[in-house]
Amino acid sequence: MRWTLQPRPDATTIQHLAEALNVDSIIASLLVQRGITTFDQAKKFFRPSLEDLHDPFLMKDMNLAVSRIHEAIAAGEKILVYGDYDVDGTTSVALMSSYLATLSPYVTTYIPDRYNEGYGVSYTGIDYAHDNDISLIVALDCGIKAIEKVAYAKSKEIDFIICDHHRPGDKIPDAVAVLDPKREDCEYPYKELCGCGVGFKLIQALAKEQEQTIHDLLPYLDLVVTAIGADIVPITGENRVLAYFGLQVINSNPRIGFKAMLSQVKKETLTITDVVFMIAPRINAAGRMKHGLHAVNLLTEQNLKTALQFASEIEHYNSDRKEADKSITQKALQQILENQEEDKYTTVVYEDNWHKGVIGIVASRLTETYYRPTLVFTKSGDKLAASARSVKGFDVYNALHACSEHIEQFGGHKYAAGLTLHEDQYHLFKQKFEDVVSSTIDKKLLVPEVLIDKEIELDQITPKFYRILKQFAPFGPGNMAPVFMTKGLQDTGYAKCVGADQKHLKCRVQKDNIAIGAIGFNLGKNYDLVTGKQYFKAAFCIDENEWNGEISLQLNLKAIN
Image (cartoon, rainbow, N blue to C red):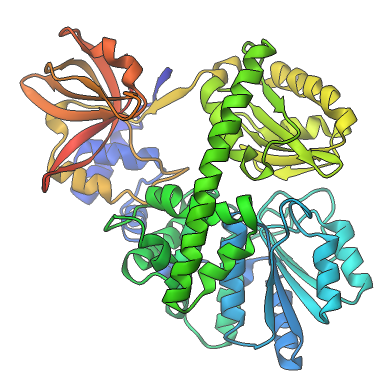
C-alpha cells in the first residue's frame, strides 16, 4: 500500500470555519478538504435540501423532451420506456415507466437481452416498437452513441428521447431530444448525474407542467439513490441531495419491491454502502443471470405477495451469480499464472464459455488481486465481449479509445467500460492495450493507495466526534468516509484472525493508556505485524460495533504498517 497523507489545508481557513460552526479543528479540516469553507456551504452539506436541486429546464433539450411526451400523451400514442440491463438502467426504466403510467395508460417497458442484443439501443428493440405500433421511445442510461439505431427508428417513424450520462462521441444522435449533462453544448450546472438521475430530472420537468412539487416525487428517490450507489458516481452536489433523501425513503417508506427484497435482510437502517452491497447485486442479478425485465417487474410491482415471489426468484439468480463469479475468477487467476502474465501492466483474459453476466464482477476481482487495468473477455455471438475495470487515477476509457482500430464498439466511464471486437482482433488488441497502458500510466498507480485525511490520537475519538462524522454521510466518490492515521499503536494482546477463512483481523489497540477495539476486513495476513507488543501505525475509519446489545466505537482498519 502507498500511504498518502492529504495536504493540510490553510490553517486560517480551518480556524475561521471551526469558529463559525463551533466545531473542533479536525472537523473543520475535513470540511475544507471537501471544498467547504463557509458557514453557508457547511449548512448545505450537513442539511441537504430539495430546494437545492437545479431547475431541470437548464438541461439542453429538456423543453423538447417534455413537449414531445405531452404530445404523445395527448394523442394517445404508445410510449416505450427503454433501458440498459444493469442497476442504473433497470431503476431508470422503473422510475420513468411508473411515473408516465400516472399520465397515460399506453406505457410499456423494454430491457435488451444481455446475450442476444447486448448493451444499449438495439435494432431488435426498435423492431419490437414498430411491430407494436409504438411511436415514441424514451431511452435511459444508454443511447448517446446510438447514431445508426436512432436513424433506423426514424425511418420507421419512431421518435427517440435519450436520457444518458455517458460521454458522447463526436456526433449526437438525431433524436427529438438528447438529455445528457456531459454534452459539450449542455450548460446544466451538475455534470455527474447517473442515468436514473437524468431520468429523474425529466420527471421533475414533467411534474412542473403537472403543477406537482418536488415533494410529490419523493417516492421515486429510493430508485435514484440505488442507481447513484451502484453506478459509483460522485456523491457531491445534486447527487448528495438525491442520495440523502433517497436513503430516507428506503428507510421509512420504500416501494413494495424494496420491501420484498429487504425482507431477507436483517438490518434496521440502511446506509448507501448497504444499498450497494445488499440491494444493487440482487437487482443486477436479474440482468446478469436471466433478464433485466425481472428487476423492472419487481421494482414496479404494487402487490406485496407477488413482489415477494419476484424477490425470491431474484434471490435465486443472485445465488447463481455468486457461484459463477467465484468459479470464473478462479479460472481467470489460473490463466494468468499459466501464461506467466503476473508482471504485465495490464490483465487481459479470455475464455469463450465464461458467463457474460459476471465478467464485470470478475474484472473487479482481478483488479483487486493484481491492481492494474483489467479486461475479461467472453464469446458473445460471433464476436468477443469484454468488461473493463481500472485502478484509481487511470482512465481506461481513454486507453480503449487509443486501441479503437481493433475494437468494433466501446463505451463507459473512466474506471469501468465495455467493448466488443472480432475474434481475429483479440491478440492484436491485447498487445496494443498493454503498449498503451505501459507507456501512459504513472507507475505509482499500480500500487494501491490508502489516502489519509488526518493524523489523530485515540483520545480524540469521542462519541461527540463520531456523531458529527456520521453527518458527513452519505459517503461515496467525492465524499469518502474520512480515513485517519495513528502511529505508535500496540495490540493489547488479544489479536486474532476471524472469519470463515481466518482472513479478517480482530484486535484491540492501545496508546497512552487509551484502548479501542478494531476490525480489519481482509487484513488477516497482517496478523504478525500487531503481535508481540510491537509498535505499528494504522489507517482506519471510525464506526460502531454492536455486541450483545452494547454499542461501542471501533476502528475499521484499512491498512497496517
